Image (cartoon, rainbow, N blue to C red; front, side, top):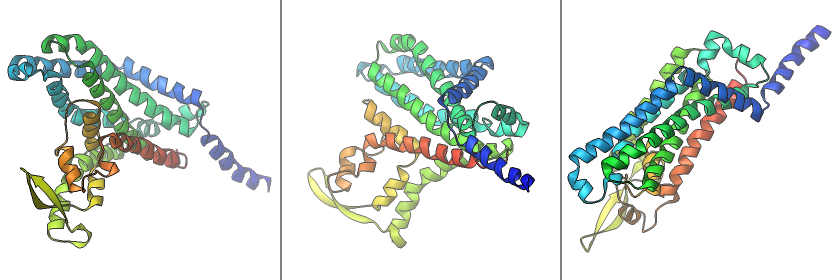
Length: 323
């Protein structure tokens, strides 16, 4: 009878312990993750990559962009060109950083050693997210800071606000993808499955999601189910003309893309307009006032969503899986 009682009570105690969150424990896990990256030269490699990216693009602008420099728009051009590259490589780096963060330790069995220390499962997930995010964010910062002098020399000076805005948005963008990666890694003990999941995430956002706008528009033109178009009045060259746009909810779906949020955030923080359509025209499409989810500042809410929601799912599932 007592044996049965012990067997039942043991998982309960374990579950109780695993559900606790300790800040000190989280920071310990994060610190170890970051130090491991420094020892493996991963951190320095990323710093050099971002340094070369900035210096290379600034040098190209200085050499080939005399007309741009004459117009005093070199920092705008730098932000635009660098953002087009970081929009692709930051997610790739974040997904690679998070790929084996937990799945690798479960596969090797080292996670059991980690959990034998005073770390709860939630501490491990949050600590891994902070550690991997720190690797990406600090390497971005080091690369940007080291490149600043050369960038200023190539461009003959630069706008520190725009330059800082690019750095802040790149760090936030990277943390969103790191959260997705670490959370997916926590759902499986196989690094192969985790790697396949990272590949699917990249395809989802850079192939499928980027095609949604076109798909929604084509379905609207065919008046398919709830995709029928909305007619609005547009002013063009002093004349009013009728035009059509998609349903409101389709714009909400397409703007949930982290890459689109990255562009809108940069448009909000810098003088560079990275949107496909100007805000005046977009406002006309919606009767003169943009929906809240199409405002540039709302991009930070979208990126926060991609940080918090995947993390919440990862915390819930990892707390209950069989290690």
